[in-house]
Image 1 (cartoon, rainbow, N blue to C red):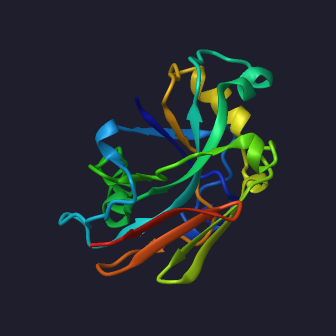
Image 2 (image 1 turned 45 degrees about the vertical axis):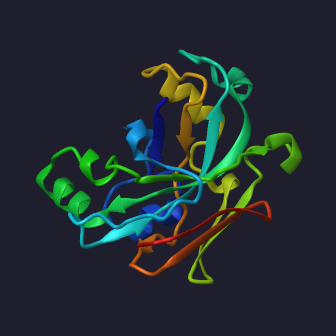
Length: 207
């Protein structure tokens, strides 16, 4: 399986990073390896190679059928469950790679950098509309990110259609759909919790 991650999919998040870039005209994506998975609310250990490790809370979609060059109008057939994930990012390394014009996969794809909720929710059970879901992340009990899927620049069906033009999506693949405003650093001793539609899905420690 693979983890497909969408970048720059919420306007306010683009502004907070202050990268000077325009709103993207097409989805931007990168892929994390399966070794990036952090499951079962296991602790996240800050890697020694970064001094600025950030959280990015995201709605995630589990692909339930093979999708290659699928039209957007049929993309809704490719999923029926949703969950939450954290795209951990070595921001200092990413910033330096961007400055030098280098690829920045090493800041995103390192081991255990993709926390995935232990359970997924049936989309039908949370209203059935993928673009009408709310999620929230708290760090040490304080709300840091509040997201609404309706604020995405590119909706989930558009993302699936676009990615599938380049990379075949397979059963079990995970799609991280982008993070809303509010990203920030984590430190040893922090506790991270996240809810989707009122259901608590993530609860783990930073070590």
